[in-house]
Length: 148
Image (cartoon, rainbow, N blue to C red; front, side, top):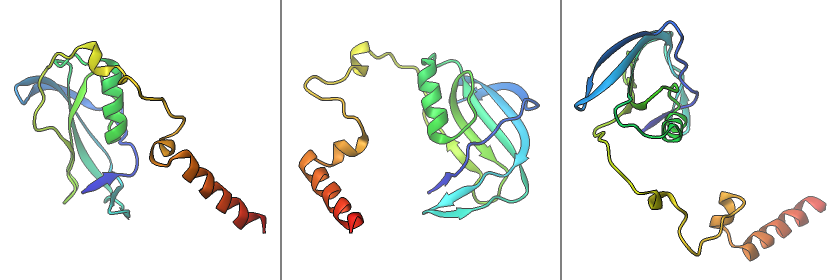
């Protein structure tokens, strides 16, 4: 599995057309740009010169802007006014950056997004994985190593 190392930038000159994807109406953007840099198992692969991009997103799902933003940031695809469904390039071997196999509107209650009862908000994700006494021991070992 490969991952983008940098965000894909969509120029203002990208052409726009409408189409359908998984039975949803979509907006398709096309442009030519520098090939994306990809990493494969932490080894960096630099893309060839330039390539064509095909970016597909939909406004038919009607998700909040925060959902769109989270998906765009996670996959490092350009922000759009809808939910990203696909991003492909003409680059050999690594042409598919994002491919959605199923997209369908779904209603969820507000309670699905509420924090579970009895849980505490932690200051960092590290605090979730390491208990306080273990963290203090690790910090003490680190201080001892660097104070000498």
